[in-house]
Image (tube, rainbow, N blue to C red; front, side, top):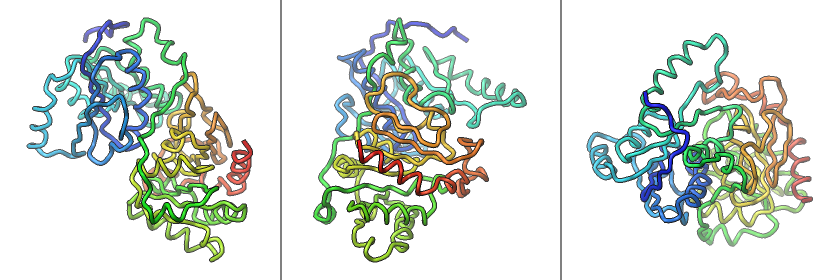
Length: 388
């Protein structure tokens, strides 16, 4: 295995960024893209990701071409994609640790840097065999890269993880974190007239639906919070993705509200695109949501944001406070912590955050830490956020 270079003077003319995962994973690559643009102002940047997951890049001034692929390509699609990518780039940034992302990087570019995965809950002394297996699986990835960055799900923020992919191109890698770091949101699009005509200031955007059930906050807690918000004279805009479970979740919440409160709530019914959701959030006085991609979008839009976190460590995936200087804005565990315009709330318990899929470690599990994160704690954070 070749030794990893400490510094590379490479000045690429064409660069490919690879993020073959979810919408939020695409958004958190934007600080990396911005910093790479500072380093190589004349280079041409392209981006490869899954079809339907790239709206977070709409209007990004640094990306000249977006390449979409299926999350499960067939043989013919693989051939077309490889033919399109083959040795087209000087450098590829592999921002996800999957084998497929690395294969794309190997096919497309003469040089690569990449992220290496690890065990999701970290490794104990009894996990030496797992670590050894992981190192064996990662050996070929290290061999084809100029440099690699190890994932640390508890102590390293994902924004810092992506930025460290540039370390090999800096004589002093500390420069990466010496200036304000910001996430670039997509350019906004006009909100549909049927929703726009219902808006009146001041309004709060509430997004209850996460990708998986173990990140959900209890229905009755949303009922209490939304009722309190409306009693303060605020309009509540209920946000959702088009996914059936998100739409049903919002309908379940609405069904718990009394008529007076219900009349002050506007349901977007999952009809907004990502750029339209960004436009909606930009004009809100506050955003409240769970651990999901739209919460990261709210933070990127510089809207005061309250994020409800359960199993996920905020030190790894907390919404980035735009303009923050340094690699880590958050503590691993704190009932409430505010950095810039972002407040992260966590429930009690020595197990928080566990980074498991809820208490039963499966997608449909409950999470006791979120069950114990009571509405009063969120209301207190709302009061503070609206005062600033």
